[in-house]
Length: 304
Image 1 (spheres, rainbow, N blue to C red):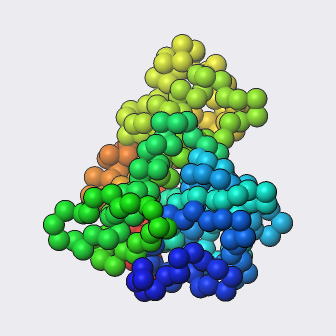
Image 2 (cartoon, rainbow, N blue to C red):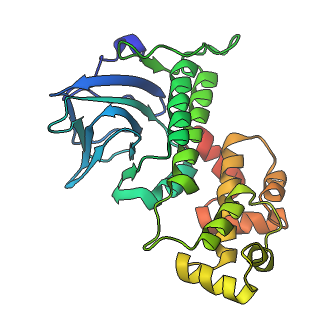
């Protein structure tokens, strides 16, 4: 498949890209534009709205997407999307791609329905970063692997890029990884009922920022100016998990990113993620993800 073979905009009955292909584009569609895929798509679909308003639905659930909203559809999920009723247009970035396994866990808290995720607008600074990352995806997908990747591609004329080389594919997915991390990070995380205590939020941010550090209940409590017992009680009551369980999950997420995005040995991944030994790391990782680290890395890179 080439960009020339793709339609200017998907229309009813238009097949989605095949699995494993990374395709990215920028559309600005007028009233009347709509797509209905009752069989879903074999790849993930990310949309990032920059203007106007869109409507993305799955079954009886629907999400109105305005500027700064990221809406994600999982593979195989029957879906429809269109310019929202009453809107004059919908301007948005989109990409069909294979997702890295760690993304589903990060997107989980933002689920609207099975396989439909909506991430509310991020602060202005993050919006600029997300928009720039989509622009890099559009350019990087055209890289042949020789010389420097192309400069930014103008978005006028509803451009579409298809990543043909493995280098272009991996580079484009790195930009999408940045988008996922930015929009699912602390700034884009849905608030707990009533909001989290600032001291609990701070502890979560410390774990996420440096999961490999030797955090303990005592060190996190000291940062929050609380006794260890008071801090542990407050953290558990507000998040539904103990501080050490939250730390283990942060370390596992960090390990997933290292396995997917680097060639570090399993031993080095374990050490960088804060686990005391490769054996302990492999046991905990397999209990969480159902595969040992090496097999997980192989599946993430080959889809098998």
